Amino acid sequence: MKPFVHPPFKLALPGISFTLPPGWEITGFEYDRANGRFAFSDRMEPMGQFSFRKVPAVPDMPRIWEEIHRRATGGNGSKLRFTTLKSRVLLVLSGKDERFYASIYHPEKQFLMEWIFAPAAWGAVKQIERMLERATLNPPDSQGRENFALFGIEASIPAGFELQEITPYPANIELLFENKRHHKIVLHRYGMAAFQLEGDTLANFYHRKLCEKRYAVKTVAGRDDAAVDVPHLEFRVRGRFGFDALLGAWWRGSGEALFRPRENRIYAFEHIAPARIKPRECMEQIFPAQYREAK
Image 1 (cartoon, one colour):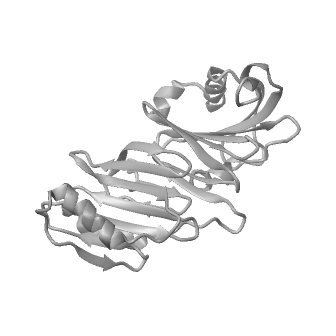
Image 2: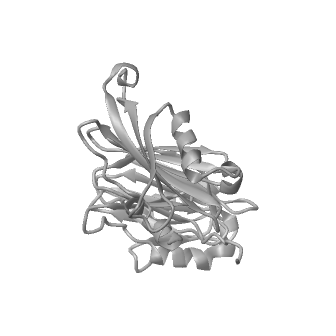
């Protein structure tokens, strides 16, 4: 079996999707529902950052970039060169020992998205131009599902759910989504899977992870209709906000896990809602690419 080589990392949020140049990773972040910032680095040094924020009207980006560049260089920087790429991205080049920039305004969502690249990123400027040219506005699919990609997780999320929390652990990542009724979808990617399984079954491993969250697991079973090993767990959990976590009614949840040996990673998710609502999400809906490739 050939060793697994992870493809370049993808970042996909409602309003923007792009793939980082080879070797780049997300090494820092700030995020809420209307604003976010992600820092990028390769193995040697920082390469820059991407940010987005709500802006109600079309901004004068050339003027804004000129002022940002003037402040960054103390007024002694090179004259900026502006180019509009075919994906509506404004690329702003400067001198090769200076920062350079890019931006796109999404009028439908009123989002301004900005890239600031460190001087070290000039060595990858051709890959950056291709990244920007291939960036998309990432619209929902015909069923309203949103495409999300962060920290190596790529998932399809049903309409109405928004990303609320990003929790990185050593070798692992957790993303929490919630809709207006406080129903939740939680995504996991566990690295070093062979070590974490330690010869145990995937079902037992996932059972332990849910128990660590104080979920009351009711059933553990395999799915007869799944093309690969996908343990399916049903559980109960207290209401998930405020004092409901201690005193509220029990909510019901379901979760599934998938082990990809070649990648040495485990993907899992939980769907949590009030007891009267039966969660219906399954592995092939949430993680369609991982499920398809594992068959």
